[in-house]
Image 1 (spheres, helix red, strand yellow):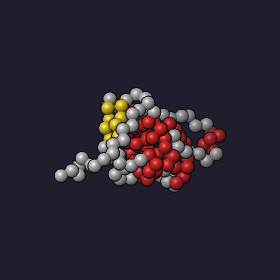
Image 2 (cartoon, one colour; image 1 turned 90 degrees about the horizontal axis):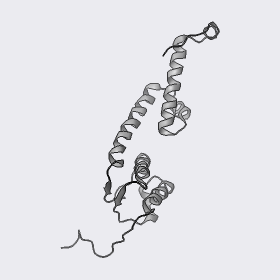
Image 3 (cartoon, one colour; image 1 turned 180 degrees about the horizontal axis):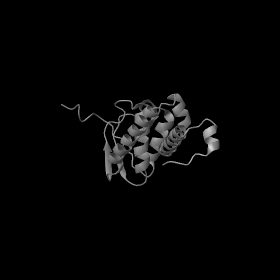
Image 4 (cartoon, helix red, strand yellow; image 1 turned 90 degrees about the vertical axis):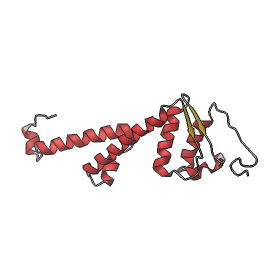
Length: 154
């Protein structure tokens, strides 16, 4: 995609190559902003304008999106032992995306031995934990099972 460069632009010190690179950078920024919903300029500034690294991050994001569809599409998703390990920031965000996509549309079963009050320890923050819990408990049945563990019986 090339564009005619006026003599004024050329004499202002901007070559066709630099303008083309700038347009590509702007296109990447727009695409990434639409996908991720973040401040792309801030992200590029943190990467010191490294477009190659930015493209790698974009590719990883696209890869994660295709993996998310694997978990978003089944009619019933069963997640066993949530909270066994903390998910971290990226894991929490991905988990939130899965739950949000399934919210009000598909069934999800989650097992855990932690009460909702401790979900802030599983997810990156209590804000994310609250948002996930809100989506999960909406129009749902919560079964609290008490007593001796079936696994520990002799």
